[in-house]
Image (cartoon, rainbow, N blue to C red):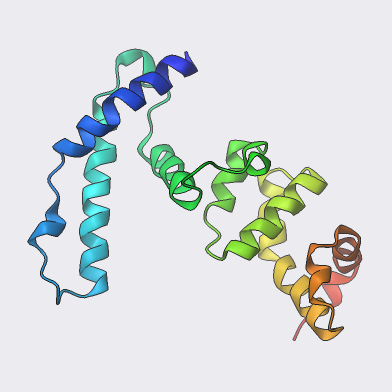
Length: 166
């Protein structure tokens, strides 16, 4: 079933994307970044909605606008191929990781999720507690920036993180 779904997407995406009007052609060079980005977002939204609407009935449970948007985001972040390390995580964890804007921070949490086998709710707790920022802070304060990637160092910071603040 998943292969059929993938085959359907690969077949339909180019035609569906080509059929959506590109409103960015109406923009002038002097239009600001926000206007250009909103035009791209509008076209992308129309594309994804149309793709979901065209799904055969047997794929309707797999077709969700928000899921497609996140899959697309994964592709845009890793256009050649998503790293196997991130793909080995559960989809609900990947969805949270995709919302992390800073690449180094995202990679830190990927490694942390893999090392500690975090589920989505645990990952959210680490994000809420600013674990990445705390590890960076401690590493910078002891002038050992490379420690950020050392799992033993991270474990030590995790043990004392509740006592770290600025």
